[in-house]
Amino acid sequence: MVHLRKKILVVIYGAFFLFIALELLIRAGGFVFVSLQEHRNKVSIRQKGTYKIMCLGESTTAKQYPGLLEEILNQRNIGVKFSVIDKGVIGTNTKAILSRLGKYINDYKPDMVIVMAGCNDMKVSYYKEIPEDATKIFQNCRAYRFTRLIYMHILNKLNKKDAGFNPEDDKDYINLGKNCWAKGNFSQAESLFKKAVESDPKNDKTYFALGWFYRVEAEFSQAESSFKKAIELNPENDKAYAGLGWVYQVQNKLPQAESLFNKAIELNPENDKAYSGLGFCYRKEGKLPQAENSLKKAIELNPKNPRTCAAISVLYEEMGKPDLAKAYAEKADKLRLEYYKFFTANNYRKLKKILDKEGIKLVCMQYPMRNVDTLKKMFKGEEGVIFVDNENIFKEAVKKSGFKEIFADMFGGDFGHCTQKGNQLLAANIADVILKEVFHK
Image 1 (cartoon, rainbow, N blue to C red):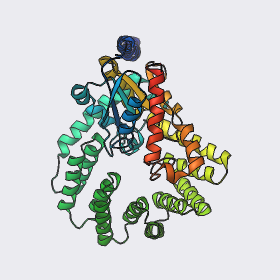
Image 2: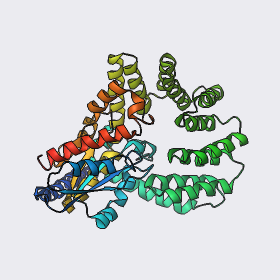
Image 3: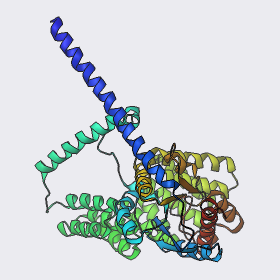
C-alpha cells in the first residue's frame, strides 16, 4: 500500500513539474522570438526613394483617410516621396487582416504598416467553446490554455467526424457562413447564407441571418429586402424588426426606424438592441432625454455592451454632464479591454511579429474619440510600436463643429465613419506623428 502511494506521488509530482516546464518553455520561446525580431527594428529606415505606407483596417479605412494621408505627407516636402496603399476592407476584423498580411507584404513590400482595427472583433466568439475562458487560470496560465485548446480541438474534430455536414440543414450553412465571415471570406460567407435560405426558404431565421450580414457589410438594399422577408414569414420576429430599424437609422429614415424599434420592443421588452437603436434615433433628432432613457434601458438589459456605454458617454457630453460621460467612457474602455485582451490583442501581437521579421515599422492608430491606452495595454512590455492618439483632437473638433461636421454616422457609439473634414483631421494627425516619430521632422 505504501509502495502504491509513493508511485502515485511520483506521478503527481512528475505531472506538476512537467506542467511548470511547459509553461516556462512557452514563455521563454516567445521571449526569444520577440528579442530576435526586435533586432530588425534597429535597422535605419530609408530616406530616399519612395517610402511605402500600407493602411489596414475596415470601413473606417477603406477609401477614407489613406488618399488624404499621401497628399499631406508629400505636401510637407521633407525630401522623401510617399506612397500610401489603401488595403482597408469593409466589415473585416483583425483575424482576417492577419490572414492576408503575408500576401500584402509580398505584393506591396511596404516600409510601414498603419493599423486601425478591432471594432468588428466583437462579432467573433473567440474561446467560446471553453467554459472557463474567463477564469484567472485560463487567462494567466499559458500552459493550461495551450492544453485546453488542444483538447477542445481534438474534441471538435471527433464531433465533426461523427456529425458531418448536412446539406439539408440550414443551421449548418449559417454556422459555416459565420465562420467564413469571421475569417474575412465575405463572398463565401454570403454564398453560404444564401444556401441557408435556399435550404429552407420558409424559415425567417435564415433571412434574418442574411439580412444581418448585409447590414454589417453596408449593403442596405439587400439587408432591407432580407429583413422584410423575415418579417413577412414571421411577424413576431422582434430581431428582424430591430435589424430593419438599424438599416433605416443608418440611412437617417428616423421615423420609420423609431416605429420598427418600438415594434421590436413591443414584441420583446428584453431586446437591448432595439432600445439601443431607439436611443441612436432620438440622439440624431436632438431628443436627448429620450435618448438617455433608451440607452440606459439597453445598458440595463445588456451591461457588457461597450458600444452602448460609449454612446451614452457621448450623449452625456452633449448634455453637459462630464462626470457621467467620463464614467461611461471608462466603463466602455474596460469592457473592450476585457474582450480584446484575447482575440484582438493576440492578433495585434502576431501582426507585429510578422512585421518585425520583415523589418517593417508598425503604427497602431486608435479610433477617433477613444483612449489610446487600450491599444498600449495590448503591447505592454513590447517596444517598437508607434501609437497615434486621436482622442483629444477629435473631441475638440466635435465640441467646436458638432458631430455632423466630423462624422457621417455614429455606428461605433462614440465615433463613426468620418466626413471629408473628419478624414482630413485624421490624416493630418497621422502625418504629424509619422514625421515626428520616424523622420524626426
